[in-house]
Image (cartoon, rainbow, N blue to C red):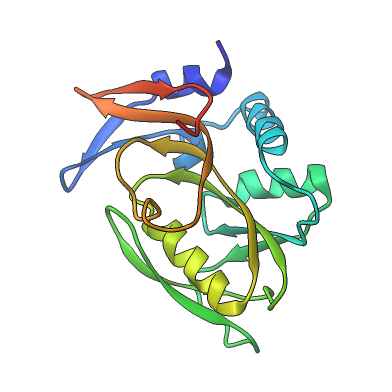
Length: 188
């Protein structure tokens, strides 16, 4: 059994405002993220993502950073982190991020009209963050070549009614306080 699947099956579940949430090293930074698990994830992303002619990897802060950094190191594709802090730099674009449990303003810098980007994130759940990111990238004029999320929580999400398909490594649900693997290869 691969490490990603096993680590999800072992993940504790918490409830936050009626939302069942698994605690996992990829999505939360706890428990400890073993290098072998991160390496497995990065290899799977590199195999699954369309990386041809990608100019930049774009990831929302914070939990996509470690995964995207590792992919950037392995592919030599520069990394842009969408921050929760406004810097006021030329070309900065604000977006409103809304998830199942929070709402924040985020800011994109260093993505320009015509950039070909790969969007990476840790988890696709409600799709609120990913939809806001893709809309902001479209506003900028960037070409979203591919989108990859490591883990997808099954169910409807805000990207279902868009032209964006999100590739995933594994799809899960939380049933009766336990993680259930719905699709071991993602995308299902």
